[in-house]
Length: 169
Image 1: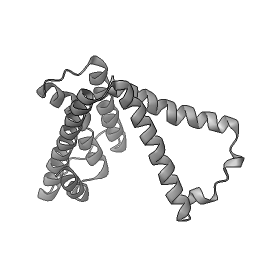
Image 2: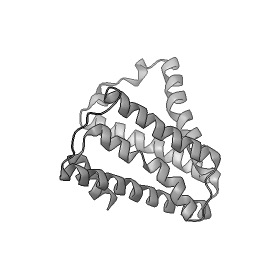
Image 3: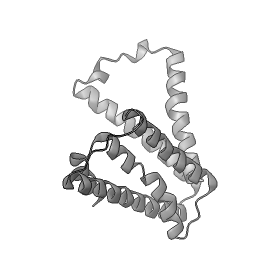
């Protein structure tokens, strides 16, 4: 349901408005967690609010400080509602999954599993890209310097690990 509504909503709404509405998922997650009986911590609320503020600032900058007073067509209004419902649907699925995972697995297992899964998924995507002659095909790993590997490790692996750690603890 969420994918269908999101796809149709994206066809009728401007990109900035779509991003703003889909970012409400960041607020739906802790609210729905409370409704499900799981208490979201202060870090979760702070992160969700910060994410929404960032999108709002981006939207304001994209509109030059404010949007024009234009009337939305019926299909645009329907698209806005569809995107909002899609964000709620995604959030509900995420909350349901997190509740199940936390009951079934140790947080350390979740962090490790997610980091390994993200790494393998990235490697698979690069491999498929190389097989199909994409930009990865021309990359010679022998030309990547040690400093570039460290930057890659810090920017991707460390941030992914810390993000997973914050999410599952």
